Image 1 (spheres, rainbow, N blue to C red):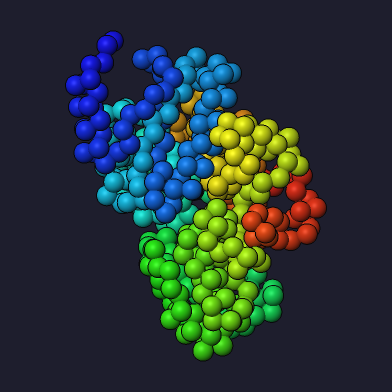
Image 2: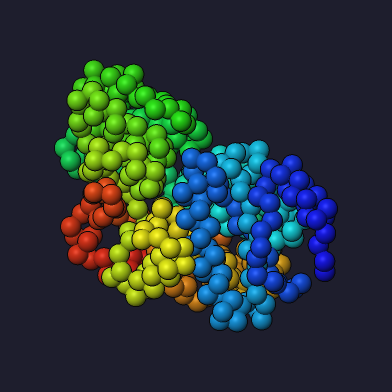
Length: 410
């Protein structure tokens, strides 16, 4: 087919008006290719998470296609930039479902975008796979008994799990006076709620609870309140750029207390903006860039070579993005179909192990449990001179052990 200049410009303008990324040159796919949506923020403050997730997913799809695809068909990833905006995410979901006819979608970096967009997949009975967003409510939005079936799955460490680890770590370090700083997004405020619930369960209360906004660069007011309240440690919920401003703010005040952050403190933006002020900050991680396991080593080598980098901008997002494609492919293969309800049922009853880079997935989901990650799989990472390393020497020593999900009673 010959594409005229007028047609090209018209398509470009249409894509721009829809708020989605213009089409790009991609490998040719047969008309019967299996279309899987791939959505995340590829521009803006959350882009290092989105790009890492996208690029990890693309590596997995390329490997699967090279090996013959699924059900004799190639996987075609249909990429869309949701810009970390709830309204764009909802619009993208409708386009992927109604126009692109995807059989499943992976992605969602931001909790707010997930909550705004995944309802369209639920209504269409098409599985949607959260491979980065961590809001606890994400997999509970359509749970029984209000809904007969839930089409929302996840292979990231949800916030209740992370909040519990963060509180326990603060107490393990001997701190009694805890300050909580969280951004004003759905992600930050839901995480803050989870932390306060964890503290309440231990009959404790934070000495200060402060909020900040995306793009804030001055945390002086929040930090002074925490300092004046006698805080011995800061538990921080946000994404890389703003978490970095907390460490920079402490440095400006000449006040240094330990900081335990949510997982996005592993973002390259945190490392770049915080500089040496970020050293020592710890955060829950499902994946650390090490090559102690053959599967991880192959993944890292392929990622570095393919994208011309020496580290993944956000390692957790890249690894979980990669694994999500393999999990969806395994479900389609088991179902022997691209029908949404059959893929969902297969995900809930996977009968073969799926080797990923985060873990080997062995029955990761059930009808009642759509979270693939349990607490025993998560370790603390630490910022050290521009890299994320294991915070606990025992975790580093046992890095070659694949941590697998604890069996669910559901």
